[in-house]
Image (tube, rainbow, N blue to C red; front, side, top):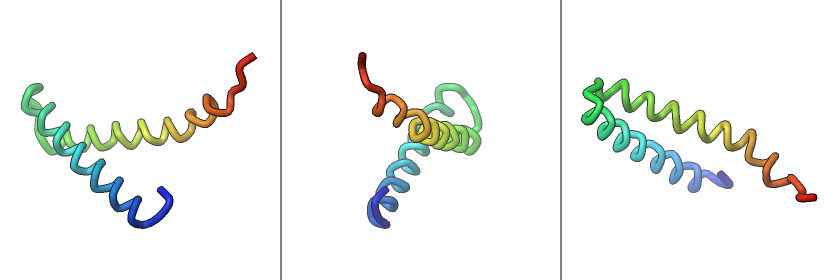
Length: 64
């Protein structure tokens, strides 16, 4: 993020989405809601870290 306001926005957005996805998944999979929300949050975190690590390699690649 480029500033505090943007970081605050993204943290709220990811928090709400992980809760909604986690509760929905726990309902359909019959899992514990708290653990499912945590797994969803970790999955989002890993996806973002992976995208930040691998994403620039694809953007800077020149076509032959």
